Image 1 (cartoon, rainbow, N blue to C red):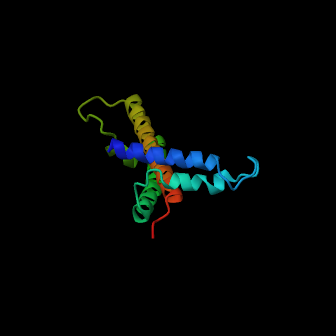
Image 2 (tube, rainbow, N blue to C red):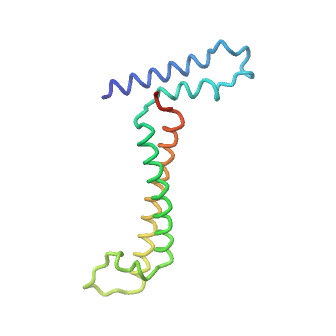
Image 3 (tube, rainbow, N blue to C red):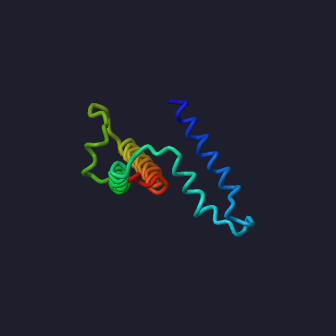
Length: 135
């Protein structure tokens, strides 16, 4: 596994080095390296999901960001309908400060999860952008 990752990394680095010494450019200012050579170098770098899986993951990530973001907003607003989801000890003495602190903690947890879904979306978008499907 490590050997495969190292081999792909070396291949991508070689492609980047070749792109810096491209023969199509006469000067460094006329080189359109970002548009012409970088996608070729990145296309060989860790293609771990195909087009169908990346589309599914992107849809689920967008849904996760929207849902958990809104859920975090509702926890922050201390919606009464979410009170059973606070996981408070029912035998303990419940005071207002404990309930408000738990609502705030749950809102933060939802926003962290939404951020992780956003990170997943970015990774899958990069995979989809730089790794075109092989036909």
